[in-house]
Image 1: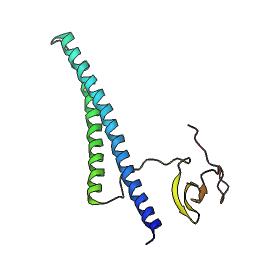
Image 2: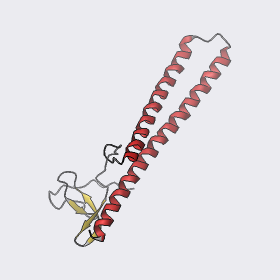
Image 3: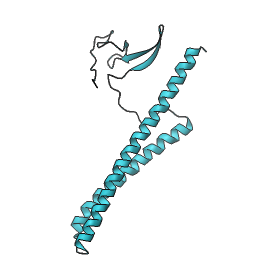
Image 4: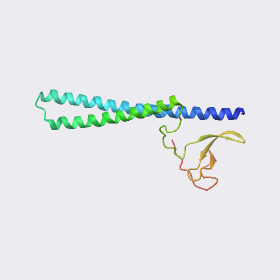
Length: 148
């Protein structure tokens, strides 16, 4: 096994671990946003109860209860997804974790005869193209490059 094989294997492992961490953090951020919404709903519930002091209609409260139920169910589902990612990581299973959509502008690290290079895979024919190419060298498809 050459040093480049070890580098390639290490980069692959590092990439998968980074992807799992990113996906987990993204879900945790969504949960944090839902928790903020949950807190706002509880505050609204408390204000409504205080404002009307015992003469609150069930109709007013039911809307708040429904919104809370939706947010709590979403947070529970996201917690399950995070637990699933962590469980698979502990088991050494790299398949099946959450994948984010790739964009045509995404580059990938590839080992070539000339060394390690950044390449762009054509979404149509899966041919590796130079990162500078705006058109696939195999099928001629143009890449939609996102400008940041």
